Image (cartoon, rainbow, N blue to C red; front, side):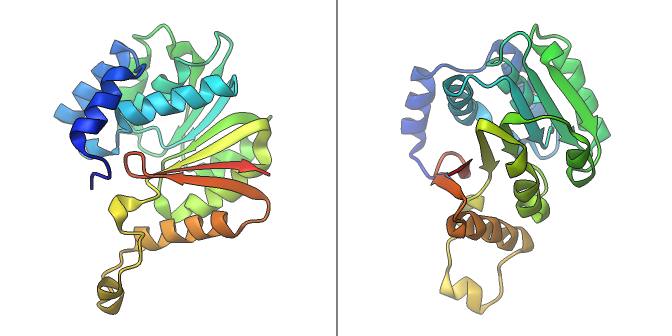
Length: 218
């Protein structure tokens, strides 16, 4: 579902600072060869996250959901030389692709991949993070959020991807009446409602790509 006219989005992309040609190669390969290529965040979202990372002068990033490595590299490009992206995923095949692409980039050394479930790996991580990007299994979005909020640095923020879920999160009486709401829609609604009701979190839900929920502690 496109929330913004494609001509306007293309114009915005053309006028924005964008990820490197190394990221373009990941995108091109993934769209041509990998099932589920729609999971790529794309240029507009990557540019926006780069702006956020630079704004808070982020040095340490946690990503939940690696896929083929586009978003991890796009974020690493905005970190200082000593910066670090820890990215977590359960799919060994796509992670292997990601590692191969990262090895061809001068920013690849900033990325550390951890293979396994975020629910298992997050508790093993030490230190704080300036930026957390949640783009993994929707069933555990609310758990990922609850687990990572305490890990934020004083300037830290969390971005949850796909929080509009092609618009399906918006209540529709016809759909509700026929019970056409899928599980992922319900999971995303739950985390959106949780953030909105929290007295401890400041959240802004943006209609960028498929929805980006920006969250900070108050």
